[in-house]
Amino acid sequence: MKLSFVLATAISSFFVSSTTGFGFSGQAQALTFSGISSPIWGNPTPGSTDTNPIYTGVGSNTFTWGKATSSPGLPNQLTSNGTSFSADINSVFKIADLTYFNGKIVPDTGIEFVPLNLNVSFSPPVGTSQVFDFNLRLVNTPNDSKDPGKSADLVFLDANLSNRSFTFGSNKYTLELIGFNLDGRQKSIQALEEATTTTAIYAKIKTIPEPASVFGLSLLGIYLISRKNPWKKNTKSR
Image 1: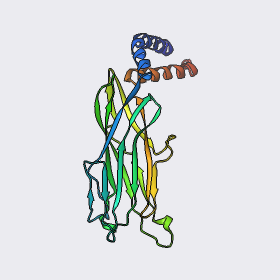
Image 2: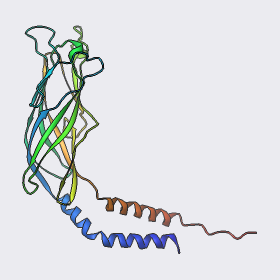
Image 3: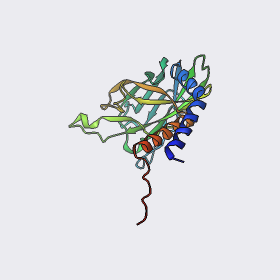
Image 4: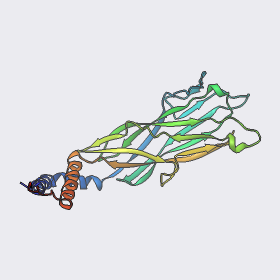
């Protein structure tokens, strides 16, 4: 029996049996998600040089870290505020606001990572609440009195994100933070010493493909390759 015939039969059976499933997938793509977000800060992680980390605000929307180098100086501070949203699948929307104040701190009193826990309450028809955990990396640079630009500290969206998936009906989705601007290219923000930067955090909701759909596409790829490169017939022995 030829391989191409076997694959063609399998692919035909797959698509016939999956018609209903793809119908549900089409409905998922047309769904609009709306709701409101409420961010709070989690327990931070010090870096290797942060031997005396000082911080406040775990469990609230305002987080500070570091000991100010002078009095009445202020430490570093991040404040995140939630927002309402309404977005279609794969469209970019604002999920929260972020304000960053760069204070002058004693070097060993800082931290390196802080979790941003977004409690998202979806409106009907989803009608559920879920906490999504994300990580921000904090880069505290040495202060340079001759070049203020070199003294700017930075906040990065960490690429290692977790707890982003959720389920509605029979479909699974992910909530992805794409960056600090609409096109997703800006992954960090910075602030000069004793200055404030305000920005927005943007997100996107995507559908997680069903395993059967992924298998079907793989099967189709194998079939097309076999059609392009058919099995060679065995040559007769001399």
